[in-house]
Length: 487
Image (cartoon, rainbow, N blue to C red):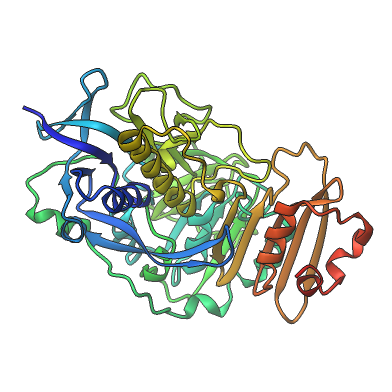
């Protein structure tokens, strides 16, 4: 017989736990089940509201039993969904359990797009378990190849010490997922700065998934929860060379082949020298990477950080978005009745605000999880379909850190979907290490990138939302004492 619950949430990441915590608060009398493939779940702590839309928080890793003890009406099982019966509202798991729900929220996140899957010399970094694997390999390594140009790749390049690093980038500038080439050039000199040598104090526990699983009589095969915003601060990223750092970036390339030494020899590639490169010793390596520029590099292992795909395993017959995520409306409802989705697994299918876009980020995972819980409660208890979208979906706002610099992204920060119908104003403040870029369309601000301690985030947020006509300030807009002027 299936166990019955009012609410079931699948996924122990930020979206799932945020959803569960809000459900438990709103409905203390209703029983809630969280199904997590990992014994470690992640919740938000130290939430700071920097502006109306901009939030900064820490991610706290804890054993699932800690979450259970926090809320009397919450149960957690370490398991993985293997079957889904939407007609009877029943979930089956790989441990042969059945659970019946009234409302279901799918928060299974995303899985890394790993190049050369099942290759023992290629790892994708997504969760706590893969970070431990990376650490254990790196300590024995002289050289690694990092493939990708997003946040994880960038932070690894900045953090790794005592190991040669080759960074293969498909674009013509670093961190293109988040910032424009101008901002990349601003940050580039700081990539090898002293900041990476400092070990920050992080108020967060670090758990081993392997150790935490010893007491669990379960078997799961999926990835665990994604990493937290401060994961890199806890990483022990040291190899075994005597060099503190040695790095080479190769732009506008992709990986063509991952080869063994025997394959390299049989293809006659060993004689292809890479003279002029900082990493010019082919030698004998465990694995070789051939890039689309036909250059060949030997290394100890390859780190694949090339993005993610929504993890919709075991959930079929849903309407999907263009990126393969579960399509949801403004109430976070999927195409199947009484089933909601939040976080990386879903694709926003509602009419978006002119200044909001979906990116699979921690901030949006939390916001979507909370929004889904509100709508689930409204549908279950009061049958109220008037629950409105939270104001956070009016403006894209994200704060992160690259090379120890605070980076704030607002609105259409890279002119997304504006069809080149926009104007950029950029200001670099020498000495103070600040980079300010605003995106204007029709004389009104629609986006911004702020690097460093600019203290302009609230002002720019208001200018974007209020759509004040800034035409009269012309190209001198950023020469004003803008924070006081528009206070």
